[in-house]
Image (cartoon, rainbow, N blue to C red):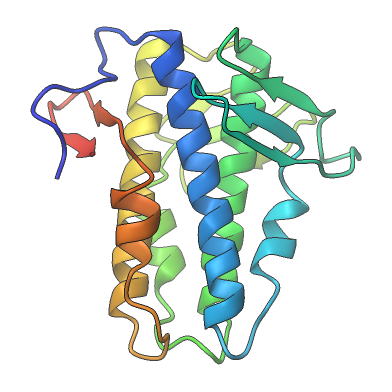
Length: 212
């Protein structure tokens, strides 16, 4: 359940909360991938899939670090750092692109795995929620539709809060779907990687809140 008072809202956010949420969203996907590698009887490539997408190190305000060092290529941008001391617009844009692509990778692998009972992860946890387009420094695009386009020129703060709301909502939706999937054994995806890991609340422009 979201907090009564949001930590991040359209009227403003502090940089520490932003960096902490970036860490939490990243570590949630990493944790889900590792858990699925162990729980899905047919596929063990969830972690490999997102490792190939992320090329960054994220450190939160408590010193926790998630490092995902991919290989720079024509589609993967140079390695970047996100720390409590600062986050550049370029690093945030690249992280948003990579996070969205990693979410899609997880959902795609789930939909195509014989070890998973549900085949609507992309439809429900990605397409229905991640409705903004993101263009990274390599000119690659991701996002289910084009409600708004983030790029190196246009990355306005108010719309970033809306995107963060969608990202947290996607994690909650994905983990709820995983808990309900009868073919998977574990039923604590939401407890571990949403409730316990996403400890900030985001409010969108409509006044809706998501997070913990």
